[in-house]
Image (cartoon, rainbow, N blue to C red; front, side, top):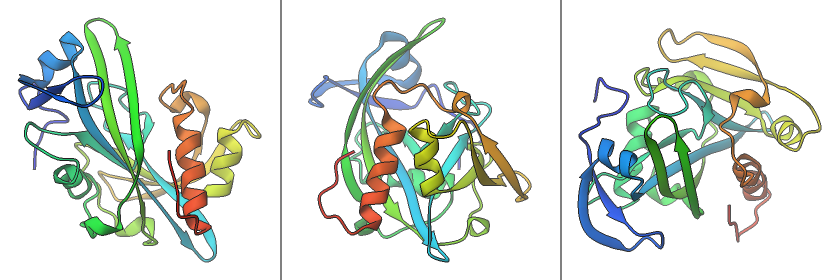
Length: 219
């Protein structure tokens, strides 16, 4: 397991905006410097406990090179050179760590994301989005503190109300990675990564629909 929040020398396959491999492989640092298209996965865990639906998100590690300390997908990461999205399910075990049945992960779409961050970072990704139902309690996770500062479990209905601006905050349960301590947390919008594509909303609605038994889901 890596002791770094990210390895600047990790190799990525460069793709075009449609996901077609270009045959070029470059260092992570160079891909983000040059704004090359590359691939990533996001895994969002949701579940039910005592008849109450919930979603689990992470607070990103404080040493991450993008959005440190922000609220993000439960597990996320880039595809290394030569990997398929299924190979990148390793991120779940590296970050949380749990080892779900790969067949339980529901592919819910591909997100096209492009951002430029000062001073010299351009992030252009195709993100494969997966939903995973897992009803285990928050305390059963032991997240990797290098990657994940904390895991957060939020009642899904309250999360939806917050994301759709019916409230200005949402109360949640937080599990600190380093100490394993469980705490109460209040989340406000400034803790989320800016997402003009309404990404958080779309994922939350997707989890809600999955719990309702709907078969055809696209995030």
